[in-house]
Image (cartoon, rainbow, N blue to C red; front, side, top):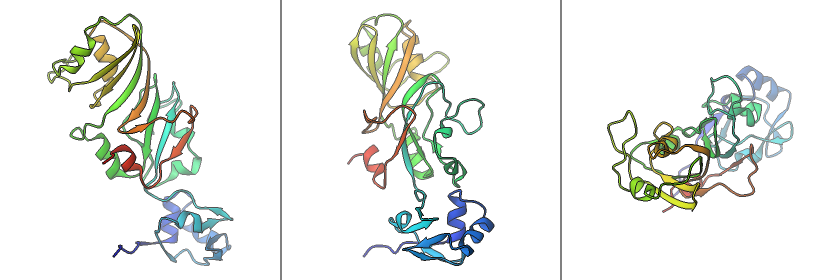
Length: 246
C-alpha cells in the first residue's frame, strides 16, 4: 500500500517556491489567481497534497506551478561563470529563472566547476541527494575532456591508475583514475574524488598544463549533445537512478 502524499499549506508552498511572501500569496488567493484543477483556492491557508502531478494541477494566473521541491537540474555550464551564490561576477544561478533563485531551500550546485571549466553541472534543492553525490565515501565517477599545452609523456595511464600519485601539498595519495588518450594533447580523465582543482593538479604533477577542461559525465549521466551551452534541463523524479544506476 502506497504512502499517502503529505500536505502543506498553500502560502508556505508558494512562498518557498519564490512566488512572494506569505502575505503576497494570501493576496493572490483572495484575488482568485490561484487555482487547483481549474477551481479557485480562495484562501492561502488551504492545504494541498504534494502529489507528483501537483505542479501541473496547481496554477498561478493560468500558468502551471514551478517544479516542486526536490528539483534536480543538469546545466551545460559556460566558461567564465562561477558556481556560487555570493561571489561577484557572472554566476551560474543567473541562468535560472529569477523566481527560482528565491526558492527555499535554495537550489545549489552539486560540487563546483571552476570559472575556467565548462560542462555538466548538477543543481538541486534536495540536500540528501546533494550530499549523497559529493560525499567522499560515495566515489561518484566524473569524466573530464582535457586539452593539454604539451604532449603526454606516455606514463600517465599507469601513474594515474596506480593509486600512488600524491598532489603537491597533500599527504594522502589519490584514488586510481582512468585516462583515455585521444591525441598527444587530448584525453578523457575519469576521477572518483573531488579534490581542489584535482584534474589540473594531476597533469601539473606530470609537468603538463591543462588548457581546456570540460566535464561531460557525472555517474552514469552524460551531458546531452542537444543541451546548448548555458541552458539546463530538469531530470525529473528518476534523477538519482540516472546518476546511480542499479
